[in-house]
Image (cartoon, helix red, strand yellow):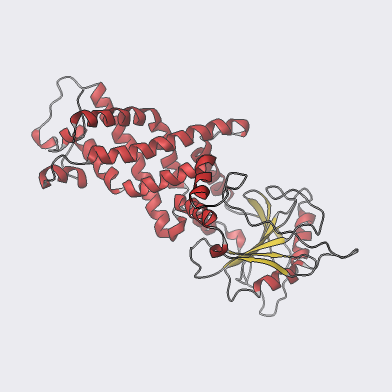
Length: 405
């Protein structure tokens, strides 16, 4: 392995790490915090549960629940409804992106979502993770910085593997860079931690940063579709349900009750964990359209589904209740499937709580990599005079990863 070429790789690695290190640390810290965002909110939000009803207690119609929400919140424009099978679960009515209210399905009582403090904190963490906390028009600049820093992190991961690669494969040269050593201090400790964490978290960090590239840049997202032989969507972001047109209804026809549509949709699956429908016209939803020109799309999560994030979509005629389209994850094109996998691999949710834990640990490792990288760089450019280093503190493989000129 050429020493000169190692220097060519080492110096961009060092400089890029110094320039983007702070932003990488911010994204890593916030990534750890929001790794279990949904689980934390579900655990802390007690308002989503209602008192156990009597065995024969009737549930109010969905249309009535929506009317109660409009009565309690006249300014609200419901954009979706989510129903859960548990008798003690409230119905969630979405009234905007990331916000909603709970409605007691038996009494119609409307309650605000609980755990406000936790929700707000996690929301702020997500804003810093995506836009460095920028608001409004400044988010474009924040997104550009986090996107570029994520790309640098990917470069650091790949170039770091090259710099880690031993010149000689002997246990004496490999051991200091594959596992933690006790009794080290200063530069030797930082070198050991930087190499060990970089090695073991490398596969996860490559996945997190590569998927982050697809999320950050439309050209990267479009490339996923192009490489799979599919036409990229016009807009950036996660895939959206297929748009289905509804046949023109007879004059004077009125939409049938939402309860009937919910029942018809649930009849298409043997079991379910939740069912939601997106309503037109609400904040975060599609623009308002004349009733009868758009289908109502129901999304059903089934137990034991694979992938874990998969759901079945049903587009239904709101005037007849006829199922116009049934679309499972397997029915979508390979580009859309790959793009959906990428979205959930980035958070670890693709592999359930185990994947989320691995992603969180790798993000925590990213924080330590930034810290040790900064420490090693500081000692390189600002060495302490009269510093003493004992032989035990100098890893045998130090010379393989740090060119001196």
